Length: 261
Image (cartoon, rainbow, N blue to C red):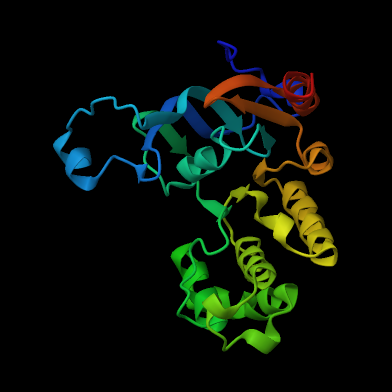
């Protein structure tokens, strides 16, 4: 059972006066196995009620928490417990079936290898497209273009269709773009595990810089080392429910106790 009261932000080293960045209240999302979310546009706009079926399940339900600006949140849990779904809801790429998610500012999501990128467009065009969709002007994109390409080490593939890149190179390009955005919230899923060690280390240094600049971080990872390095607070999801909202060490300790006994 999740705590009825969200812990005070000061417990995680965040000043109590820091502005609220994310409000999640009674959040729930409903899927059909092998078919994704069963909430189609007709049901959404007609307000039709759904009937429970044996092949349907709640990926998340009854999840509530508040995040303040500058917090670093680690999302903990086994595969299939709703971690990536939670990030997609915060990013706005999924709609909840119950409850609400309110984000007071934009998000820079790195939650899927191809998320926000068109496979048929070149790397060059994708950089302009993704940055533009997140509000950067043409002049701002031009100013940051060389930094993005240099960080991704992508100069040799600028005119290559994105779909022809390796998984590791897709991550390089995606992270290089999202880490140059002005959005206050950074969402990072397990995709960084695809990159090689040298590039991961570069990404980690960049995350350190973003946190030092006051960005808010949501990190989904099975690496305890990464979670303990970057995060002060943990959300432990189990069976689609928020089992613990507390210091990252407590979240990891409870997770390990539940699944290593």
